[in-house]
Amino acid sequence: MKKAISILLTLVMVLALGSMSVFASPAAETVTGILHVNSSGTQVTGTLIGTTSTLNLTLTATGGAPGQWASFSGTVSGTYTGTVAAKINWNGYDTMFAVITVGSTTYYLTSTDLGETDENGYFPVTASFFLADPVIPDVTAIALDAITVYGGHPSGSVYMDLDAVITSAGYTGPVFWSVWVNPDVTPKASVSITQDGLLTINDIGSGFTVIVNTLDPTLKSQNFAFGTNYATTYGLTFSDDTEVTADADVSYVVVIPSSVNFGTIYRDTGVKTKDFAVSVENALVEVGSTVKVTNTTTDMNMYAGSKTLPFTLAQTGGIFNFTAADLADGEQTIFSSVSCDSANLQAAGSYVGYMTFGVDYVTAP
Image (tube, rainbow, N blue to C red):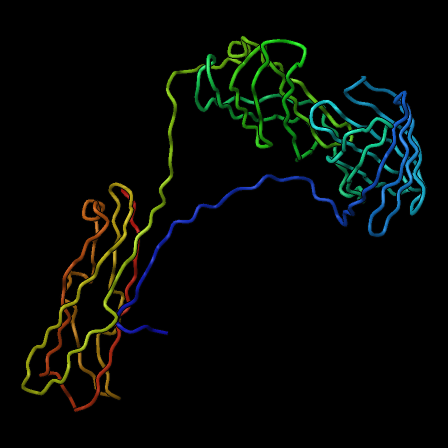
């Protein structure tokens, strides 16, 4: 539906944020409970309970590295009866991955929420239990991609963006980051890392280790040592400059008069003219750009029933151009006019017409 002679337009540039892809699990069920590890660390038992599933686990250690990871095999009973092949990783981000086989059907039991073990060997677990469809592929290797240094110098605070390169036949995530500082050496490093891989080094101290973990059946874990000569180790270059950045989106408001009223006219009135001003306000545009407002009306007539009265817009091509230079202070108005000639009157009546405008943001060539 056409709108009367003008509208108020606001154009806002919107930034779309990307998202990380992780494996999807159909009908995943959250199960929780308390597991127990015996004093020798060779057996894990306990029950995890969800909305529809009860999993009684009895697992015996089959291998591992003390304090880092352990593999287990055993059985599950309760809602399901079958065999279990599991691994628990304590190196870096604590994780658990179990493959549960019930007849010809395979399920996964995964966790990134393993609580601290108390003095009696009990630890709380919150896990996801789901059908192994699709199958989560093994991760065979983890490497660090090129490291982006955001600022700082090895002698002070340094901010780096780390990215993990995963070798796998289709593993899509997630990836977990953590850092380890040896508590038995001095001086100690002051360092932190986010789950986006943003590493902050406040003090290199005697060095530290970045640990990258995946949540695949192998629970792949890889350590990357950052010693006092890490800049040479990883081929990093630094400057004493700090990069400061900001993003400013394009935005502006186009204001066009909502109506033009010629008042009462008579056959002998002649040409009657009314001011018509188009403005751009609150503008923030790119250098060399133009905000272009165009009269796109195809029928420049007012109507009273079947009778017409033409009107004109005194603007070349019907175009109002607002350049970036004009909008340097955020505002600009272009004055024009709308006219009609009473000599074109065909009959008395209340005449109404409409103008339609388009707005384009034209970037610099």
